[in-house]
Each structure stands twice: as C-alpha cells, then as structure tokens.
Length: 432
Image (tube, rainbow, N blue to C red; front, side, top):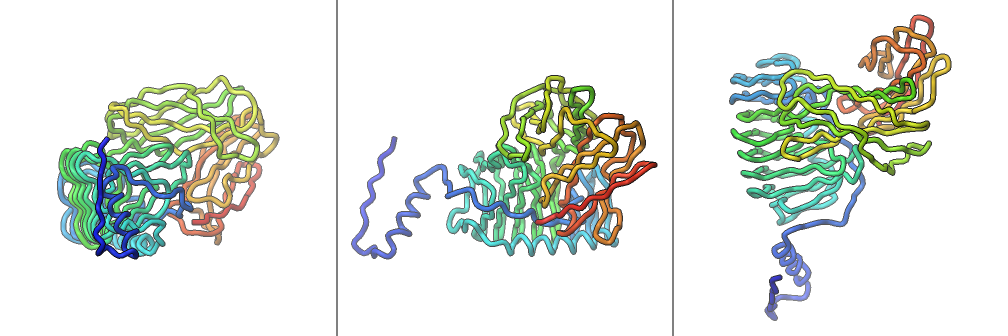
C-alpha cells in the first residue's frame, strides 16, 4: 500500500481547502463512486428514431452489419447492411426520425444532473447506478478501462450520461452492464462527436449532435448510433443478441417460455431464471436457475427458443433470461410475469402490471375454450397502434405478453382482447 504525504502551503486559503482535497481524492483513487442511488429518470423518448440502428444527416459510410433500420437525410449509405428497413437517402420517414432525434437531444440535454462530473473526464473505474450524470466538455473511458452500470436488480433502471462536447470509448475499453441493466436504457448525450475505438465493448444509445465513428475491430457493440447534423461511420458490426419477444404461459401445471432473437453475436446461450413473488408483485426477487438453452453463436437471422419449467407450484412467478456470451460476459432480459395454477374462467383479461408504467408493462389473458383471439393496443382516440397477440388461445392457459412504450408518448392507452364471441377493454397509463 502506498502512503502519500501532502504538505499544504500556507498560501492555500481555508475556503479553497475542500476543493483541493476533493481534487486530491479524485487523483489518488482508482475507483470513484457517488452517493447513490438517485431517483430513476424516465427514458429519453426516441419515437420514430428509436427503430434505427444508425441514423445520420450527411451520410452513412463504412462496411458492417447493423441491427435495426437505417437512413440518412443527404449523401450516401455506403456498404452497410441493415437487419431492419433501409430507408436510404432522404424521404419523409428519415426527416421525421431526424426531427424526433432533435427533440430527444433537447430532452436529454435538459435533464437535471444528479452528479456534475466537473473535472472527472475519465469514467474508467467508476460504478454508476441509475441517474443523470452531466459531464465536462469531453468524456472518455481510457484504454482497457471499465465503466460499470449497475441496475441493482431493477430492469427499468435508466442511465443518462451527458458529454457537452466529445465522447471517446478508447481501445479495449468496456461499458459493462450488471444486475439487470439493459443496454436500451443507457443514453449517451454527446454535444458534438462520438468515437468507439477498436477492441472496445460498448452498450447504449448514442445521441450525437454531430457525428459518430465506430472503428474496425470493436469487440462487441450493442447500440443505436443516432447522429443529428453529421455522418455515421460504421466499420464494426452492431449485432447484439436482440430479443424480439419473450412470453410465458401456464400449460398443464407447467410454465412454457418462448423467446425469439433477431440477431446474435457470440451467444453461448440463455440461463433461465425464476423467482416467486408475493401477491403485490414485490420487486424483491430471489432468482434461481431452472435451466439453460444453448444459443446460436453468431446469427443474422431470426431464431426461436423455448423452455418448459415443470417444477412450479401455485402463485405468481417472475422469469428472466441471463444471456451469456462465449467469453463469459452476460446481460439480463426484461422480467416477465405469469400466474401458475390460475385457470381462466370464461374470459380472462388481467389489469396490466405495473400501471402506470415506464417503459414496459405485462398483460395476462386467456379463455376457457380453444378460440382465435387478438390483443391490441389503442391510443386515446381509438386508433390501433400495436398488435400484441394474434393467434389461437388454448383452453385453460394463461398467456403473458409485454407492451413496450418506449416509442410512444405519455398518456392513456387502451388494450382490447377480442374473440369471435366477445371482447373486453382495459385502460393503462404510460408515465415517463
């Protein structure tokens, strides 16, 4: 252990002593923490820009494969393959996405800081919980350094990190997500340009006023790259293990889990975890491993997975997936809920939970006969905005689906379960 001896000059005035000692502590300490946790901020509303893996104003260049949509206002698209819709150059959809991105930038930059980082520009060695962290002109994670974002078992934890000017994720640097943190709830506001260097592992949504550069040979990038006035350069794949659905249903005294991925990178597999919860949906979880399903390694095409949990009793259950990479890194899915032992009598449509919600909520439903049914979501004027289920319901099964409100505005929404014989409507509130 090193011992530091510091002699203070008599010229250092008492009123400056605290600031001086604070600077010394930051200089000598390798791991910096703050009094936490803060209040959980609402996600930054992305609206139409939220479907993009890469969005630019003055062109997208490079050669890579990107999960999500892509488009630019002007210039060219380069040799980038998009797993979603390629909106090309110009057009009304790209224009609307850029307008929504401009609003998202204003929203993120206008958030009140829980911590103003002052002279601390290197985030390496820090562990942050949910909150808003405002930075100086530039923020970086130094080479081979690690920033840990800790959700503390709250899958809705939101992290907003703001750099007034530039963001640099240097060679070999890592943004690590632990204890349920989700990459799509990590927002990086960048006042000018962002660069992700080779060998780095990055998680989050970059909202850049100007440009974004993703260099070749980045190890793993799970991100959205959204640039408002400049270009996006992509030379490494942006292919997270992207879950497109995760559902649970109670069948013959067992819980059947089904999930799908759009893309996978270095996916070893999924550890299935279960927790019993009390009748009030307490957020105090006791997770246990109930199974493991092998992943598909690297894939650019949709994959389907299922798991049947036969060792269940009665009551409310929570499930999540621990997705594990081949190098041991892992990330948790969102949590879904189901009820074991409760069979629908007649027409079952539970009130969504949580309600109000931000950004997602669970809806359980079922019937006492085999029938075709649809579960849809409508806005306050009755327009259908999303179909959550469209298929056959089996007698006696309780189904559970997730409604993700990330791309929708605050307000009242309605969900409707409809069969050929009857329908039922309930109200829910999205509160960001």
